[in-house]
Each structure stands twice: as C-alpha cells, then as structure tokens.
Image (cartoon, rainbow, N blue to C red):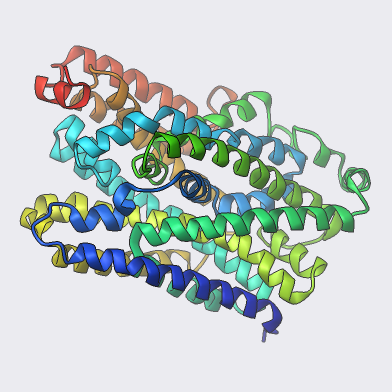
Length: 497
C-alpha cells in the first residue's frame, strides 16, 4: 500500500483547478463558435486554431511548451541520469528549435493558411496537392503516430505523479487523463494556448528553483562533477558511459531529429498558423528561444547531476520527482512538480487536438459528411466525442508502460517527421512540388525509417532518421521533376502568379 503525500497532492490539485478555470473561460468562445450556423469551418477555426489571434508571448509559450514535453522534463532528465553529460550535450541541440520553426514557417505559412482557410496541417496538404488519397494517408499517420506519442506523454505524467505523490501508477494515470480530457474538450485550442502560457511560466520558475537546489544539495557544481566522476568517469564526458553510444556523427545528426526536422511536426506547425500579426511572430521568436534555453539546459543538467544527489534510483524517469520531494518541503515540492507536469499537459492537449482535427476536419467533414462543415453544432458534437474516444485509446496504450518512455516519444516523432517534413517545406517554397512527389516522399521516408530502425539503427554512424529524410527528399524531387507540374490554379493560389 503506497503512502499518499497529501502535502504534495494538494498543490497539484490547486494547479489543476487553475487549468479548469482557463478551460471554462475558453469555453465561451467555443460555445459562441458552435452557434455560428452557415459559416464554413467557423467552429473548427476556434476549436482547432483559437481564432488565429495569438499574441507574441502566448505564441512563444504555446510553441515551447508544446514541443518541450515529457521527453524534456521526465524522459530527458531520466536519460541524462543514466548516460550523464553526453545526454545534456545531445539535448542542447534543441535550443534553436522555436526560432528555427517560426523562421522557416512563420509569416508565409500563416498567410497561406488564412488564404486557404486551413485550420489543420492536412488542410494545407489538401489545398497544395489536391489529392484525397494523400490527405487520408496523412490523417492516418497523424492518428497512429500521435496516439503513440501521447501514450509516451501520459506515461511520463503518471510516473511523475506516482513518484511524487505516492499513489499507484494506474491511479495517477486516471487522475491525469480526466484532467486533460476535460479542459481540452470544453475549451479547445484557446484553452490549450492559455494553459500553455500558465504552464510555461510554471515550468520556467520550477526549473530554475530545482536547478539551484540540486547544485546546493550537491555542494556546488565542482563537487557534483567530482562525485559523478567517482561514480563513473564516463558520466562527465560527451561520449557517455556506454561505449559507442554518443559518437560525433550520431550526436551531430541528432539535431536533425530534434531541431531542423521539428518543422514537420503537425503540433508545432499549427502554432505557425495561429498568431495574430508579424509583431507577435517576432516577439514569439525572441521569447521562445530564451525560454527554450532555460528549460532544456536546466532540466537536463538536473537529471545528470541527480546521480550525485540521489544515486540508486531504479528508473531514470523518476529522478525529477525524487530530487524535488527530497530537497523541498512537501507543499513547495507540489508547486515545483507542477512544472514538469505542465510540460506534459501542454504537449498532450496539443497532440489531442491534432488527432481530433485529423478525424473530424480531415476525414469526417471532407469525406463522410461534407455538409457538416456549415453545421457548427454537429461539428462541435463530433469534436467532443472524438476527443473522448481518442483519450480512451491513449489511456489503454499507456496502461502498461515501457521502462524508459523517451524512446517511444522519439520513435513517434520520427514517424510524423518522415510523413510531413518535405510535403510542408517544399509545398511552401517550391512551385514544382507535386502530388506524386509528395506520395513518393512519404512512402520512402516512413518505409525506410521503419526498415532502418529494425535492421540498421545507425546508418553511416548517424541517427536513424537522417538517411530516410535524405532519401525521401531525393524521391520527392526526382518524382516531381519527372511527372506533371502542379496546376496553374495551385500556383496562383499559393504564389499569386
């Protein structure tokens, strides 16, 4: 029988109440949109894109907190606890992600999205490539890979609550699932964006406080590093304690997965079509980059230093809750632990909306019942039901978790990137990109990634994702050049010429 730490649980409950308040505040916008009869995509524009009016600070927070997830706050520190400073070095490749994403997609993507009335990434794919089959493949990819990705996030959240509060993993999972499903269902994207802002602030404060406390508990940085060296000299090198784990080629190529290629994640791309104006975009880039540096470096150093402060933990994923409950009074620990919990929630709610968008907007309203687009009440009902059904599927996926969830998260992200990266980037910037090229890219990328992950995990010493992305780019270009060009209608819609 686990001993429940109510002093930690109560601050977490208060945090959840704050999230619910934001959800109910956002519900009035969703409710208003659901009453707007005859306006195509009226409800979905609010529910899935928040009315496209995010300011710079909110944009930065929702982008950063969406990308920085359980992998960054639980799985990442857990890996740093296991592999040492090598994983910290690896994780820092994520620092420019927010800047890079908004710089690449940014203004052009938002302008195009407004022009074609897109509320999801697949709306963009449909308008750019004019292929129902391609849209269906992308939608199925979103549903399959995001359910796996959300499963990883829910595992991380449940382990965090389990390790800090003292309740069972299954009870923690139920507690978390109900909270996320409720505020996402009633508030939609606006609730997600506003809670992301609250969560981003909590994450930043919690990271700084925990980092300072960890260094103090270890007797200063030099003392912590010395203890790590005594445990295993490999913990303080960029090549890890596991020989061949972090080679130069692999570390360098890892940025492709967690940096450049993040542009291809639908949950990240959605943020680039939801901001208010150019001023908001520029502020979002600045704020996002600063917050990313603080959170990524801070949390991964906490994980690496944790081996000197709390040695002997069974699972690396428990290092953050273990350090927090050990170094702080229970009620303060509850507040600080809301930070990594917020990171998980901010990613899960965004992923949940992406999957719901794929089901309701991309499949139901376009192929099953096209007339429903102008029936906001029907679209609202379908969206709410889909959110609950997807949540149940994710819950089942997460019920029996693997030992370290970071790998499940990375695998799902790689699958999504293999599907969307080149169709999005080349679709935006290359007039010659066509439907057959996009098909070739997706089939080559996803197929080769699955194949290489089974038989050739480090092709040419690099991360598994690199060669599949290179092959899918080559396939896209060759097939596009050898087949018919996009129609004049598409060129005029996207380039105005």
